[in-house]
Each structure stands twice: as C-alpha cells, then as structure tokens.
Length: 498
Image 1 (cartoon, helix red, strand yellow):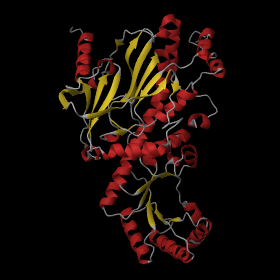
Image 2 (tube, rainbow, N blue to C red):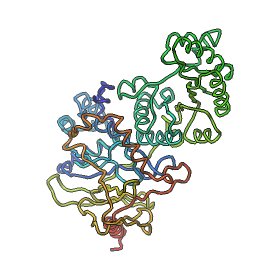
Image 3 (tube, rainbow, N blue to C red):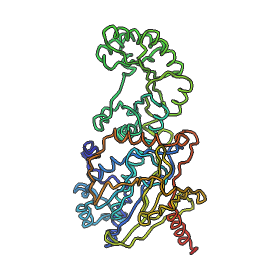
Image 4 (cartoon, rainbow, N blue to C red):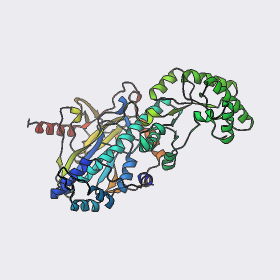
C-alpha cells in the first residue's frame, strides 16, 4: 500500500520549493542543460539531541513519493497562472508541456530504515538529470529530516525505558495531521511499542493502546461509578486514569473495581498517572495494589515525559511499568529540526557520458564544506560491536591493505582498520530509472516490525558510551584517506593555492 496515495487525493508532485522549479525552467531554456546528470548526497551535519547517533527513517515515505510522482495537467494549469514582475506568464506553455511529459529517470541508493547512522554520512545518494534531482530535493529532505529526528528521539526514550513498554500518545500535540501520522510511524521504528493514533494503526499496522480521559470520570458524579461503567463496557481494556480529583483516592477506587472484576474472572490491566509526583505516587499506588492482591496490575505514567525525565524517575525508584510519551516525542521538543542537507557532489554532461566532474562547495565554516565524489558508506564491525564507518568514492575503491579514515572536521584524527576486518556497504539500490525496486523483503513497503528489529540489532552493537545521553562518546566516522586527499586538493585549487 502506498501510504501517501491512500492518504491524499491531491497529487503531491508540486510539494517542492518554488526556487526548485525556477532552476528547472532556467535549465530548460538553456537547451542541453536538461541533459546534465548529477549525483546528490542527502545527509545531516550534527547528530540530533546532542546524541551520539541517529536512526535512519523516512525512506518508506520517499519511495512512496517516487512511486506516485507525476506532474498532472491540473498542476500545469495552476503553474500557467503564475506571473513574473512584468505581469507576463512566468513559464512558457512549451515548458509546461515538457513537465507534463516528464518521467523520472533517477537512481537512488539508500541506507535502510532503522539503521543507526551518524553525521556527515549520506543516507541517500540520488543520481539523475540534475533538474529532476532539484525537483525532488525539498520533499526528500522534508520526509527524511522529520522522520529521522522522531525515530532518534523515540530510540532515546526506549533506551531510557529499558524493558518497560513505551506508548506514543502525541497525536493531539503533533504538528498537524501529517506530523501526527509520520511521527507515529517514525516513533514505532525508533522503538516505541504502540500508538494511540488509530489512523496510524490502520495505515502502518502499528499496535494500538489507550485508556480513557478525565472527561469520562468527570461525566459521572462518582469516580467509582465511572470506573465500573468503563469496566463493564471494556473488560479487556481496563486501565483507569486515577488523578482526576485525588490520585491516592483514585487508586483506591480503581482497586475496588479491580477486585470486582477479579471476582468475575476479569482483569484490571492497571492504572494511569498523568500528574503530580510520579515517583512518589507510583510507589504508593504499587504498595496499595500489591496489598490488595492486584500485583499484576500495571502502572502507566504520562505527563510531558521524555528520556531525561524517565531516567530521573527510575533513579528515584519510580514503580512505573509503562511510559506514555506525547508532546516531547512527536514534536522533537528539544530540537525541532534535524537540519539535513542535499548537496551536488558530482556531475557529467549526460547519462551516457563517462567523464565525471566532481563538485565541491566551499565555506568559511569547515562543517559546511561538501565532499566531492560518488560516495558509499562502509561499516566495519566484529561479532559484538560496530567499529567505525568509512565514506569512500565508489570510483576509487579503498585499498584493503590501507583502510584509513580521516575525521572530516579534524584531519589529525584518524583510524585504521585491519585488512581482515569485516564490513558491509550500507547504501543499497532502491530506485532504478525512476522505478522503485521491488524485493521479496520489502515489496511495496517494508514491514515495520522488520525495521524495528534492524534498529535494535544496531543499537545492541553500539558501545554504551555512544548511547549515553550526556556527552556521548564519538563514533568513528571519516573519509577514506584517498577521498580526504582528493577533497583537500580541490579545496586548495579552488582557493588559488595550486
């Protein structure tokens, strides 16, 4: 199922920035410029949340977008209404006919969703007519930036929660309908166990969980009666929200109903705490329920939680079994944007040409200097651990006897891998000549449970010092020595020193 097509009747092919289209028009006016072939890398410069890593996410949305991409006659009719400062149509009719006839010719190599990734290494490598890549730059960044951000946040929350379940409760605080759905998908990939978002459950197969609201209790004169009515209606989904009036009294009322359910052969699943001192209240609630013989009843906690607060509450001895995370997860609360970029790194005059011209963007900030080449990411590992990532030029494969990486921000920091070190190349083909590659594993879209498992496998092999929240250790990611030297030479040449 194509999630974008099932959600929208509106064609999304104009989901791009205006300047992308003006560049396409300028290329079309220059005749042969539309034949130029380019290679673009999509990557981010800094790990989000001051973390030691990120979780790759958004590829599923990118592939859905590619699969349904086609500029329609209705799109062209709209573009024909646009006028320049001279009052004349901005785009010629022949150009709009060119757009109407276009078919994507791009190729994409991508790191699979759920893989642990790091700053400066490409998650996508997009090759094709430069003008087509420019049209796709904005939507690709929109999807990869947000979903990677939320998947990373979810991974951190799950890391803090440990074996306890984590529920995503953020739809009402999400950044619009799209944000709510994309965040639910990304959070599930990142490690949360279920969502309250029913549409996300339907579209993506995410397990659904939920309790009831304060308004349910407030709609009755008596809290116990409210719990009893809910238990009668939903005996298989009874978690009572106990803090509407007085939390400890609410726990006692839930226990009364829970014991009645137990006598009927039913089971109160637990209670939810949504305010107050969660460490103290959870400990008191646990004691009361245990004394009443409801030892298997769970305690769910919500109330603006994130990974740092979860970690702190656990340190305080909170007796919480399930964590409900909303606003601070689905909005990427403490870092609202990943800041990914999409940069031209190589080009040639046409698809058939064999003469490549490498491209580099210079800057006064070393972090913003791009790396030229047709890149691949090679991950070195052993049986237990991820050891480091090498970014190398596929056209100049590294010598296995000299596998040295150089930190792109500090050329004095280097690491060498032994010639017999195991490795895998992470960028894999997912689109060829504009068509999404159908594989047995993925079909039209990968099963999210497989992506979640992939994330967990990578996390289990990531050193604990890199996974920690405060001042994490830096995972080794660098340019292959030959690529580093080539980049340095191009920088010197561009700055007039050669």
